[in-house]
Length: 294
Image 1: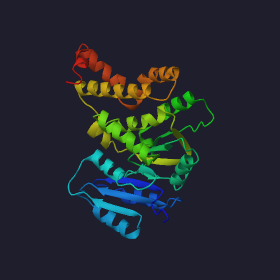
Image 2: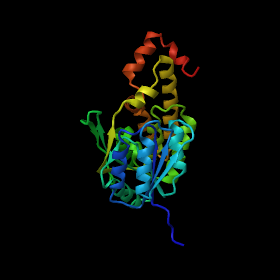
Image 3: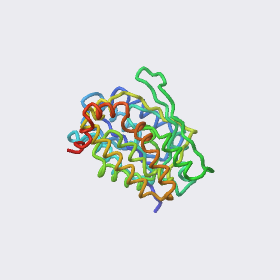
Image 4: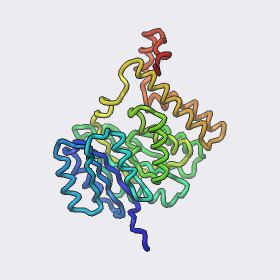
């Protein structure tokens, strides 16, 4: 019998996304690559979200909608759509972002042409709430460069929006399991989920397509550590995770040394700003660090 499974599964966890959900769905349904499914998991929304989902699901059979009986939390909802996926490839889609029409085609093409790769990352355009462009994160394809140059380029260029790139489904399931198990924070978990793809040279940048990432500030407001104790505990967990993945990677000894030397820069840009953290420690005489995990 022919395989009727979709090539790509798109998981969209949503909670009270009524303001932008239709725009996000329209950008997915307008994709030039057509062989996909959308798994929509409504986390007990209280706004117009259920009606919007019902309307789109009735219009397009590729949309599979589930309404949770109770709010299961953000990360469990991300896991739910991943576990429900059927395709060989998987990506998450946020209910308030959108994509170029060639998004799936470009990312899928990059992975299909390179069996050793497991993640394809797009160019990221960050959009402010008022619609203006806050910045652009370019991604270097660098197929002919030395491995350490490719690894360092991806580590340097990585942005939170790249989390919404395309993965081989089994590879992202393994990476998500590891991050969920060994990093007890939501803040910066996206960067650590992507980390093994970068340090093992399993990711490629695809500058031919863009992901438009709406900067609402909701994640930072909800999840960024606030107190000195929380910040130091968070930093310790982040450092342990990064060091472990570098040491366990397939890099050579000297390549690992280079990645470890880059850790302070990576941590500053992806997890916690040193200018925020160090004054807190100095003000407390450095004693807070010892209490970090207490």
